Amino acid sequence: MRFLALFFCAFIIAGCSAKKVLKAPERSMNRISAALENSKGITPDQEYYIGRAVAAKIVSTYSILEDEDLTTYINLVGNTVAENSDNPDIPAGYHFGILDTKDINAFACPGGVVFVTKGLLDTLESEDELAAVLAHEIAHINNRDGILSIEDVRKSGVLSAILLEPFKFAASLTPLHLAGFSGEFLSSVDSVVNTVSNEGYNKEQELAADRDALNFLQRAAYNPAALISYQKKVLKHHNAVGSGDLGTHPGLTERINTLESITPAVEQDATKVELRKQRFNEAVNG
Image 1 (cartoon, helix red, strand yellow):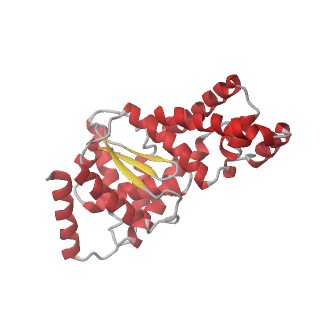
Image 2 (cartoon, one colour):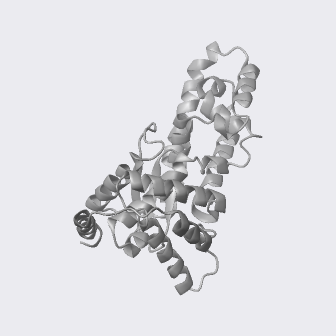
Image 3 (tube, one colour):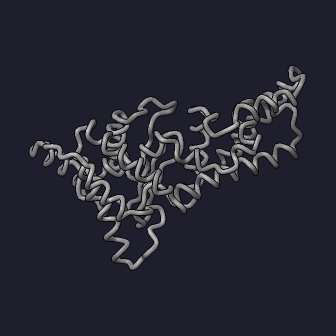
């Protein structure tokens, strides 16, 4: 939470110097409310800062796996896929981290941060499957699914006030106002965290991310069929542990069936496939 404390302190300090030039805070608030009439008003830069807050919340629940070589490898694969996505150029780039838990999951934070769990890595058998996992999460970021999960963004001028005109708006607020607004900002962040790590996205968003992931994989010269083999592993795991609730993987059987009907048959160079498997085994299992 140190990041969030510094985040809001910066606004308070900036507000002190801006107070002299602020003449009509109500006009500022009107501009702010109009600009964020819907979630599309959030710019890529602002999305990045929300994503950092979401990532900080996730890391406060799961610890980061301290393995520099493995993390470097995950980032190389992830950025190879990201460069072939529909939105490769985001403000701070894509960053990939590993969570030290046996849970099998992956999380896409707005603005370009992706986490995979050690438990998920242990279920994979190839670099192509890893690329498939990351491609799906990158698709969620491209589609802004996390940002769209902020349910009350249309009604609240608070998030927009902090993000769109922080220096001007902070100047007109008392410490009591700022405390209340920071609480509402955290509530919005919590809404994204809940979607990303607990409730999951809806079936339509998952299907769209699957379709996009197939395209990213093919462009990056990975086997798109690896997305199917990975999802079958997830389904098998849930069946094995007797869990009827697929949590963050809704409609998985339907998604697998859909993927099987639309995944292109792409001829793979056997030598390159073997090299990727070797590279994967050295990085993940070595």
